[in-house]
Length: 350
Image (cartoon, rainbow, N blue to C red; front, top):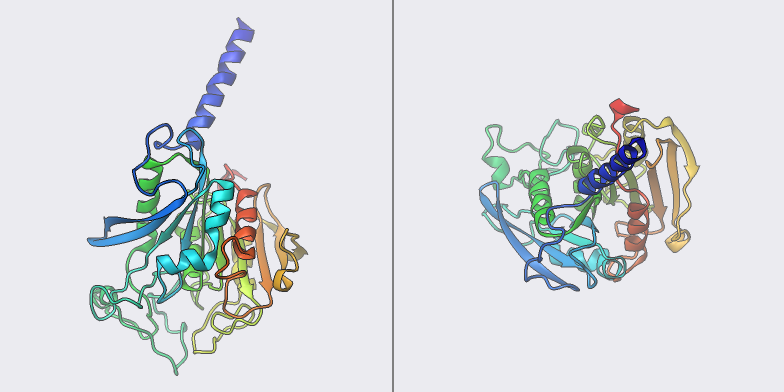
């Protein structure tokens, strides 16, 4: 009887563990579009307006096998379609059987839709405190910001849309339609999209396992930690060593914006994740070391399964391996992501 009871408990534990990891879309027929191996545009309502994203489903997607999911956010003034080619994830997605979402930022500058002004509301882009930009620089007043009681601040420069909420709405929809591994949901992006990856890491860290921001970080005054009482989250920050648009090692950009130096940002995230000696740096080897002189370091000694990493490479304000399908940046991001599934622990449980 004791052996039978123990066996039943093991079976029940396995069933519970499986249920936690998979989504409603497992075992059900997926939508007719996109077909496996292709990318399609998906439209949805959010915040009272029509929004859309591109979804790439890998060529070997199966409804009975859990797949990872990556969100990739474009830069300011760019688009979801450009981002798919720029970041280079399609080939890596098909080879490793993960889905990729490319959200489109809102472009409500001067009118509801103004192509070329797409942006994401992230890490201080619309919550002016006064130090985000220099006296020689002013931002842009998007309609969604001007409609607020406080109107537009001098340093506001993106849409005021709830883009973290938009991201979560996309995630909810995809989990209901596709077989997604809940422990392998990630965010990346470049420039304003890198800032959006940080925003997701702060607002949705209970659901995302890791983020890989590229060429973008919080503004001065907005270097806030994620609420790790909701879940720990790994970070790999990618920055060109010659980037002057969003500089990694200094504050003021070439066009007069004030960003928090990356080391300061990652020390805050390491501390929030419970990393010991979080100001100490140690080499973090990767399979892409040497690509454009890529070199990575990690911050402190973090809990098992968590790493806070900074990578530098010899480029300016460009993604590593940009515009190459299956390029070094996409390969590096996926390598880090797959090795950092969601840690089933919060800061309160450490």
